[in-house]
Length: 220
Image (cartoon, one colour):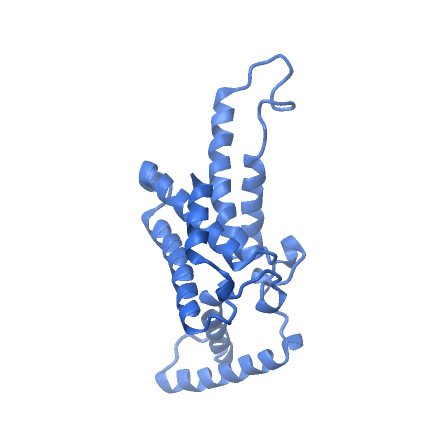
């Protein structure tokens, strides 16, 4: 997985969908635009809109939690609409399930956080498996990348991995991060973290129901 390359690809699809094929250089003055090209760009534009609504909540640090939920709601409604018409020709069943589960999980977690501690912030990437994957990487590193370990070795390596994680948490300047997760290669910003987020992500300031309905309105 290469996150920066994936982000660059999504942005390229979004930009491609914004091309106006009825104007030069795609259509010469006085000529009729190519219908097939217009249809292709329209399809790419719809895909780009969907991808952009999925991406923005995770990479745009100026968004509030309400705006993030609104984007995800728009993406969810567009996905369901496309899938209902085109089925697996649009998305394979596993990918559709994973995407909708991700959106559902984020909104459910925000609702639970609102009930448990309304004064706290809700950072979307905290819902992901980054922390578990990073811990697994440390476990593999402690064992010399030897995957064949027994129960006792696994416990020992987990303890060492937690120590390493603790050192990096207390001294973030020592941790260079992961190249394939570093968005500096494509967007001149560091790998997203809670400290760099500028938008209002306090759950008490987010109306989940209104954000969801606004997202549906945008999709329609």
